[in-house]
Image 1 (cartoon, rainbow, N blue to C red):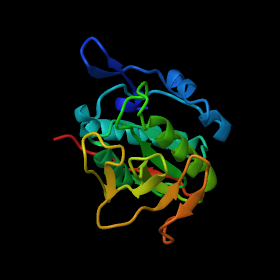
Image 2: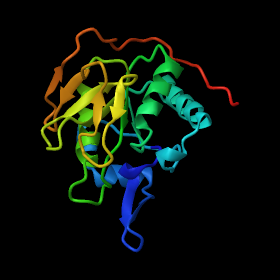
Image 3: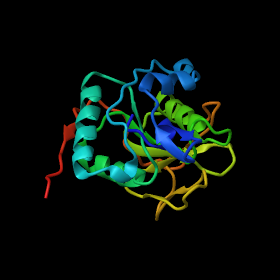
Length: 209
């Protein structure tokens, strides 16, 4: 977890969204996740994505590498949407030889709102990890404003196109890697993708200055 709207609630005194869920609370809020996989949840940072700097990419990359070394089958990184695409691209360049899915997930609307996209994005990401043979960094967000399915988007070709629409994230000069819905139906759009392996990840960090 890296904070953001997906870990937030509306503060009705100010009208702003405050990122304040703990990792345990976030998983407890979406019990469907533990019906899909064995979830181990932990907090790396509790911050809004507009505050991300290169040093944070290095921190996140190293923490992901620790989990990969521990033998996990996949990783979900919850993240604010404003710079989610930038973080996805940074991780794709930093993490060489990724052997399982590393899926960045955000939400356009906080988890306590009836129109929130958080639950579906998280659940679809978990289904994708459990059902697919994909390896690498990607993004899981709503394909449409309705709750039909989510798109799995390529890390280096994804952009946020709208401030509040649930289908704000689109592939640029590319197509989604796959489509997945809440019932675990999975359809690959791309066929030429890296498969899961036993490779050991190599982390390349960013230098300050």
